[in-house]
Length: 311
Ligand code: UDP
Ligand code: MG
Image (spheres, rainbow, N blue to C red):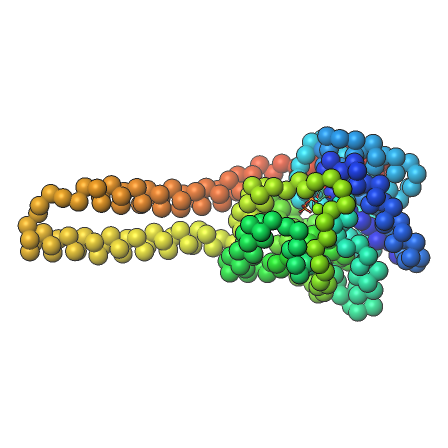
């Protein structure tokens, strides 16, 4: 019998865990020839999520869990889940039932019979999402796809079904700054995209506010492109050229018309502008430096406090 592993990151999801399990068991019932394995990753929840997961694991021996010592973020949770999965196929799925789980049989069929290595899901509409968030999200995909050679699919969710081979390739990348959307795309393999309309979560609330998403966007760009560094270098050259022309202009003007002392306010403006550009470019270098710093420290991606997985 073939096995599908479900990697389920959970952070303060006490309301949604039982609903999720119920729904998945319903799907498993309709797919008789496949065994489901669940790997719940409790990402340092502060509510009773872990107790809820423990209850399930007592009832069903296919429920495995890893509980982190603190909140390490969804990326770390996904990594931990993938690392501990044993299925022939692996799915990453949100516990809030926001991912269209009813597509799982179709996704399995696409991989098994149509020869795909991965089936991903992308939402075609962003209904129910704040307008500003959608706007910035679209802009982000435009920017990152211009800068990076790795293609990032707009609207793609982390929800996807992958073969063991693809999962093993993803696990080979042990980087600390993980940006999964890029990693999935980086490893290649044949991916089919299914489309669906946005669904709202069944209970609880989102853990990603605007600021967190903004930081995540910067993580994505710095992890998959060195474009900003080149951009700052080009900006530097451009300003050198402009200042060279300005110097010529001032020399010629002084020779022709003498040198009346004026232009201090404009001088101050230029100074402010240029130091702004300076700090901006230094900031770009700083972002890459900080990422490098974190990679070099080689800290663990997550720390387990409790698990029922025996190695
Ligand atoms: N999540 C997590 N760690 C975090 C934040 C979120 O494991 O630090 C999980 C969360 O429990 C959920 C999934 O990641 O299963 C997606 O989170 P959420 O629904 O809040 O994001 P959204 O769907 O709003 O983008
Ligand atoms: Mg959600």
